Image (cartoon, rainbow, N blue to C red; front, side):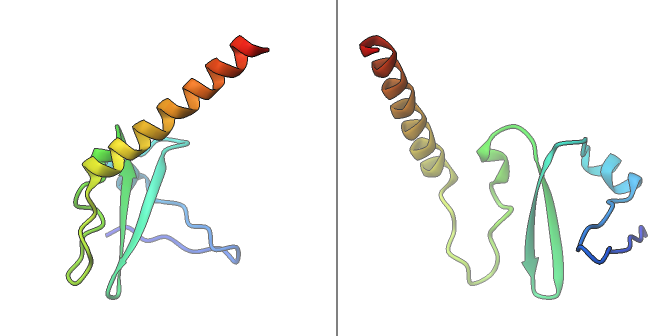
Length: 90
């Protein structure tokens, strides 16, 4: 069991054995979810599809990560097109 202490600012140092187990490195992003009286921590590695299953809890609506990824990619493509159009007209 690993223990940590929360500071007055709400900060917690994740114990090394947990960081090693989850392959967490400096500047990695973490997702925190609450399941009843449990705190779940998932490290974000790779792409959005890596989050599949991280947010589903009994009674919650399932998140369609493939659709979410398509929306994100579409929005990113639109931003690139706008940037290219501005660079050509400027």
